[in-house]
Length: 136
Image 1 (cartoon, helix red, strand yellow):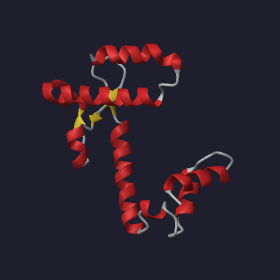
Image 2 (cartoon, rainbow, N blue to C red):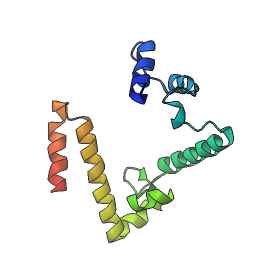
Image 3 (spheres, one colour):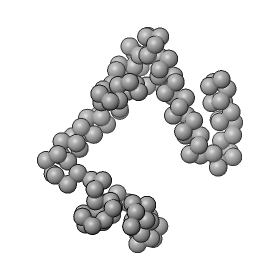
Image 4 (cartoon, rainbow, N blue to C red):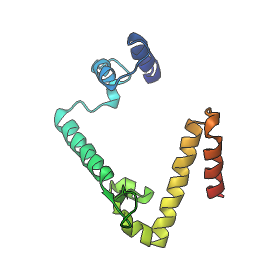
């Protein structure tokens, strides 16, 4: 059985709802296709979880660029940094022409992926149009 088939099976078992907890429970069986996608060594898994917690802490930090402005994320993860699992202060990124351009390119790529994900929602046509206008 493939991963997709196993996920569908788990979903059906739970009335069409797929929960991570149920996926992990199913994947504990080494004979499943899902099993190999998890780290079963608890020491390694704990360290990976702590790294994910650190990423989450970094992602929720905010700064105010101006006194009465809305908060924005304090750190950005540029594509070139992702292999190094690192982040840069957004104030530095915004002041550096090359990094700002890279962030803009990355934002547009993510916006297009978001558009593909929600293209069936006709109510978002104006939003899609505005994104394409900025992208051109």
